Image 1: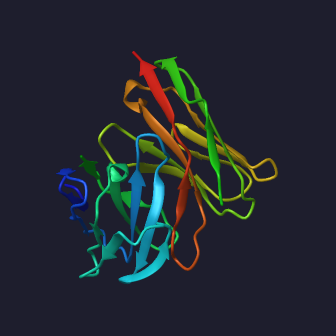
Image 2: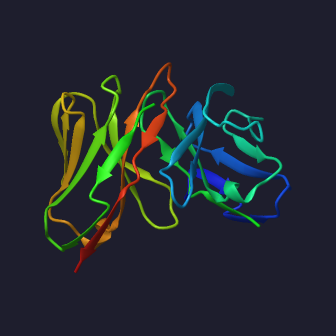
Image 3: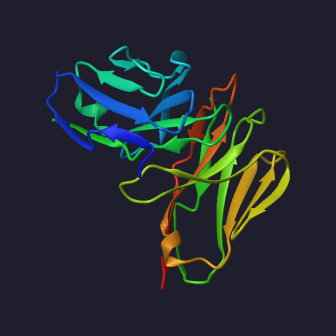
Length: 111
Length: 113
C-alpha cells in the first residue's frame, strides 16, 4: 500500500507542451520535495516545501513550478517542455531533518 | 556546491560475501550522511544514516564515517541476492527542517546466488 502516490507512472509529451505531475503523501509529513533522475546524472534536488511554503528551489528554469493545493499534495507543473526534460521525477516527503520517503516516480519522455 | 563521489561504479559478488561501498564528499559542514537503496523502477529507500565520526551498525549493515577525510563507507554482511540494487550515498544539508540531499551517482551491486 504505497504511502506516496505519484501519477501518472509514465508520461509522453511533445516538445513545447505542458504537463502536470501529481504527488500525494499519506505519511503525515509536513515537508515535501521534488527530485529528478536523468539517465546520465545523479538524483538531483529540485524543490522543497514545508507547511505548503517553498523553502528551497534549485532549478534554474521558471518552466518548473511546484503547486501545493493541500498540505499533503505537491504537484509539479512543467511548461514549454524540451527533450532535455526527459527524466524520472520523484516526489518525496519527510519529518523535519529525518529520512526522506520517495514515491515510485513519474517517467517523463519528451519527443 | 556539495559533491558526492561513489566507488566502485559496479560490483559483482557471490551470495554470502561481505560488500564494501565507498563514498567521498566535499563539504565538511555537511550534516548526516545517508545510504539509500534503489531497485529498478522504484524510488530510493533509506537504509541507514550517520552523523558522528565512527561507526553505526543496524542488522547486516555497518556504516563508517571519517569527517577528517570526508569519507563514508557502507558494509553489507552476508549479502543476499535480494540486496542486488543501486546503492546511493547522500549528504544532507538540513536547515530549518528542510532536508535537502545531494546524491552520488550510485554503485550497482549484483549478488550472484
